[in-house]
Image (cartoon, rainbow, N blue to C red; front, side, top):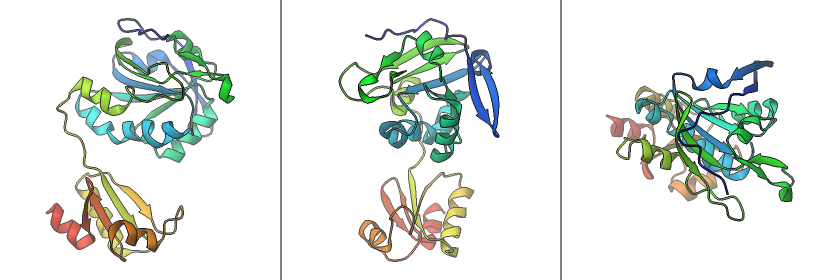
Length: 243
């Protein structure tokens, strides 16, 4: 059973990170001293839940957390610096600091080492999140111990609900585009001008075709923009909506 470390100081370790093709050591004090920091820790980079949900949602809500006084969001995994650097690039996680805990020192100090030898992982981190205030753990959300990979309480929305249940969340925007599309660029510029982050799905990439576009949007032209699940339409419709 994993025990909460609320009211205790985080472990003092040195994270061996990679930056611009060189080693960059980062200490616990560099991360936590004098700051309010959200930490979420997970079993491994490039693994399904971590890549599809856990990290992306924290990245998506980063500006909301910032508005609530959070200085930084940190993801920790028992992986090496090369892996964490590559994962960050793959995820386009510009709002998250990814820290490799390759030797498991921080994770062990938190009492969160989990034996995942059954799936060939060896010792990894159990999935959890915490709010750290000037190096002291204010709140921890630890996933229940059950078979599989439980993901029930360490998510970004649970953390945001703890910090401020009434915090205004950003709209979820998805834009279907195709290469060389001038109207797609208009739509992207309109969203950027309003400070609205968006997910872009490019036709021809990852198996997405015109058939996919028609099946999802009912249209055969790009761009097609969704905001909070509602189909807005093309660039003209988007500009009118934003106005």
